[in-house]
Length: 308
Image (tube, rainbow, N blue to C red; front, side, top):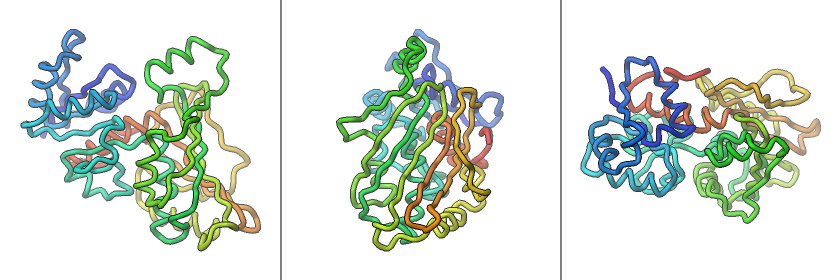
């Protein structure tokens, strides 16, 4: 069976990468609007009503508009914007965390943010298992390739080769924090410190843990074992169990990847730990996650068409 898919915002980075993952797949047929019509509301509405599935690769206001345009249709929507990630009636598109069946049955799926994907993957299973406290003031330190910032940031980094590092979100209240808090199951929002480096893609998300100061926290070894058990059998998420590496690197030459790899590093006396997630901000952090959800919603293997 062939499913029709409309990517609203197909000319953006996320939309282009989704189209790449669907190219050549007989299970899907893309509904494509030419450049003259892709921002026309009437043409978008027609495409939304004709499609089996729509993926919204738009800014938040345009995504909300698309949902309004889709009213009265049978289209099932995956929204890659921030607009619906904590909205009622939407399923969070992280099947490893919310359940594969929940995503498969959903008509409205909110694609996770890139940074939250790493944070939630690390923290949610451990909080659920009672190995980390719900009410600790967690911090998140993360770096991403500049492609996650959209066309404006891409142009800025590619035009100014002198930028070595950009940190932002300094006023706090970053738009990713609500989903990080909710889906990690925390009592308090984490302190989120995001930064951008001069690489097109790639992301490292780190959660440092002063275990000695965390009531009820488990040992680094127990944390690792719990993550291994939680993600056992996942084709997308893996937990490193090899000997501790001396370093973790992001390379500018990184190929597209839809994997998410988790690491647990611990002090010899068990007093501290560093939880680290490594992913492609355009893969499991955006386009790959959307295609994974689309596969499930269409009744297909979740890893079909993914770069793993």
